[in-house]
Length: 218
Image (cartoon, rainbow, N blue to C red; front, top):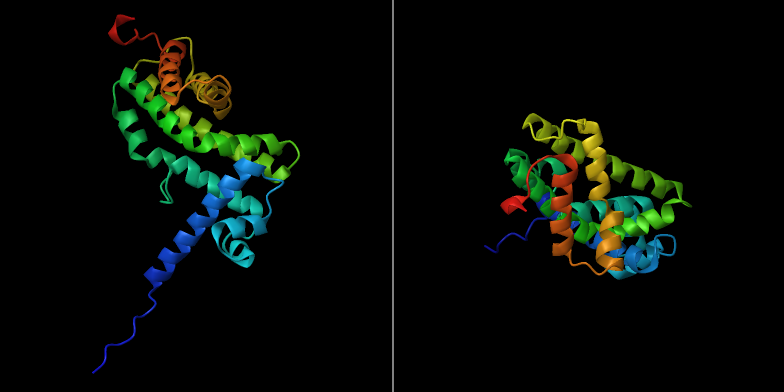
């Protein structure tokens, strides 16, 4: 008796769908960074990803939805549906002592921005003339602020937040220090290495948010 032909399982379709989604998102991110959002067509994305344009529309519906997915991939570093606040590095940072928390915040931000800052720069550059991109930029900023507020609340709970700062003001300060604009300015325009940026960011968070002494008594 000959074996039955392989069946197309739901899991197999899901895996292929996820792979296609990731391939399109990566191709779109590269093109948005290289050519800008406005100048990049859905057809160009499809060609770079090796799929039909209709596949892009079927998977994402709109070009702005492709951008949102590409940004999600860049921030997370993978396609797992795990929010930033549930990521292991965030949980580890929140569980650490205050000084270690700040270092882990800087580490996490450095990892995220190394992937996402170029794409965020493309979004920011086009946001003034595109309402869809203004919405994407605003949502991303609000998400980053939410993460920083959780970190600020943790510092306050640990008794490490400067007494003249509210958690809301501390979150605003961290949002500015760890912004993609500052990261891009220093690493791309001023030639800092990512490690130099990370060390500066950790020290800036310590000085601006706490009265903790520098590691090693510096």
